Amino acid sequence: MLDHLTIVKHPLVQHKLSIMRDKNTSTASFRQLLREISLLLAYEVTRELDMTTKTIETPIQPMEAPTLDGKKLALISILRAGNGLMDGILELIPSARVGFVGLYRDEETLQPVQYYFKVPESLDDRLVIAVDPMLATGNSSVAAIDLLKAAGATNIRFLCLLAAPEGVKRMEEAHPDVPIVTAAVDERLNEHGYIVPGLGDAGDRMFGTK
Ligand code: URA
Image 1 (cartoon, helix red, strand yellow):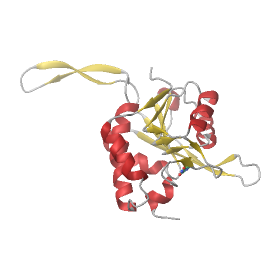
Image 2: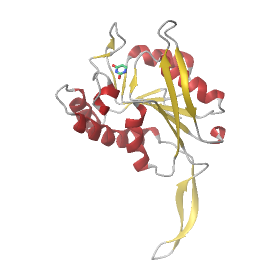
Image 3: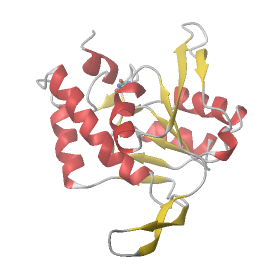
Image 4: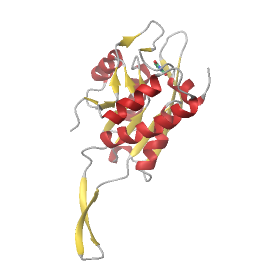
């Protein structure tokens, strides 16, 4: 079982993250680094997957070779910034099934409201990896995981690039069964809900919007 919180301190992850945080890093570099870092984070979040063996023949002799067991993984992107993490992970796990959860924040109630939900079938039989680069207040992550559980998911992991302590706490309270893998937990949220020091708006930085 993964710990509830895993901070990936690998030097390559930390180096790439520092370049991404720099406000002078271009959109193209940001996107490329996100792709690279997502591969390294995917390596961590897929630790301890169930394994089996299958008989194969190497050019030398037959062997019982280790392979992944069970149904293919489900990768769920929490829109829109989740898509930036998704592309790299799919390079590593090309056979994963993919789903999307779209949420917006109601300006009056400040609560997340679902506008899109499309996920692979048989979620109950799959390891589900939900991805969103920024775990800030945790409101949308908690809501997305509520929806995945309502759709049958029982084995969920959450992958993000950066987290705020407030978001980690909120997730721990709402979904103690969902391990979080991240590259860093920053100091705090500011009054606008941005992670400090953070990297700004991840969606804007990866898509070049303002
Ligand atoms: N979402 C972002 O993109 N950045 C933050 O700092 C917080 C939430």
